[in-house]
Structure formats: C-alpha cells, structure tokens
Length: 225
Image (cartoon, helix red, strand yellow):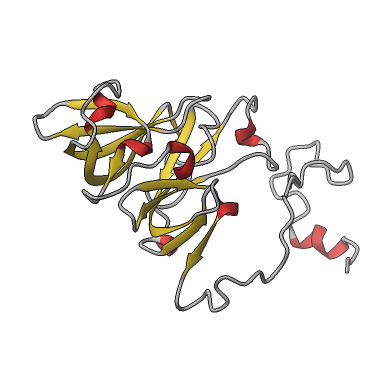
C-alpha cells in the first residue's frame, strides 16, 4: 500500500530501503564471541520492523550470502569508525509491524545533527526516513503524542544512526538561516485533527450527488465569516 512520496510504502514486517554500500562488523555474525575488529563489505537493501525490537536490516555479502535482521550498530562506512552502543545511535524500538521507508527530496543529503543519550552531539548526512502505522490502532504508531519516525543518518564518525524529529536539526543553507536557534518553544502535539466529529455537518440522506454544491443550493446558503 502506498504511504507517501518518493520511495515510501507501508509494508508488513519487511520494506525496501535505498541501498547502502558499507561494512558490517564481523562479531555480529559470530554471536559476539569473536570477529571483533574485522569488517566485511556489505550491501544493505531492506529493513524489518518487529515491535519490541529496533529496526533490523538485511544485507548482502561479497560471497553471495544474505544475512537477515541486524541492528544499525552492526554497520559502518569508515574502517576506523568507533564501535558505539546501539543506545547512542537510536532511541526507540519499532512501533508496529507496518513500516515505510521514504527518501524525502527536501532532506536528501542534508546535514543533520542530534544529541545522543550521553549528551554527545553527533552529525552526518541524511539518507532516508522510517515511519510506522498500525491499521488496528493497537500501538503507539497511531497516537499523535507517542508516535515517532526515524531518520537514518550517515554519521561523520563512520557509523549510522536513527533519530526522531525532536532530537535533531537539519541544515539547509537556503532556508535554515536561524540554524541552532529556537524560533518557538515547541509543545508535544497530542491532538487528533478530524472534520468528521460534529453533528452540525451531515450528508444528505437522499441520492443527490452534488449535495449543497450546485449553484441553486449555494445561492441559498447563509454567509459565514
């Protein structure tokens, strides 16, 4: 089911992502028993969303092998990238089984900066965005005050991160002329916006197609300010 612009689709459990050529840390494929310090060439091509777990990525190795469901901390794009805990790279687990991956044109390749759990400022380049939905409305994915998206960032240090809107800033030289300043003190939005809650606005009970939109009916409607 199409979810938005670009490459965005809502998919169950698995979704395509813009491919990432990088390295994978060998210890993640060795149960962390050994392989530390060894990096293997990898091509990430997909993501899995399982509630209670972080987004997990699928990738291809040079020998033709496919590996399924690795966390973002398993990957790096520089050989000297420091090994970093998963908690420093992202904040939230997946919100539902329904996930989309969208590369927003306005954000493409823009610089992003965020502050990690340990209050370290980290910066890098925007890659794409993960977002969640829940048709049954049983998870936080559908609650305005709880839902978060996840922007995937290629960090300067060589790792990758996934961060929500409220933890980062985006730099656009032609628009963000007040970068770093708060133009307004933001409050968490928990309001559901809908136009189908008032009994004042009801549809016609007959079979008229152009209900209250034909010239004759519009001419007799009271003016509103």
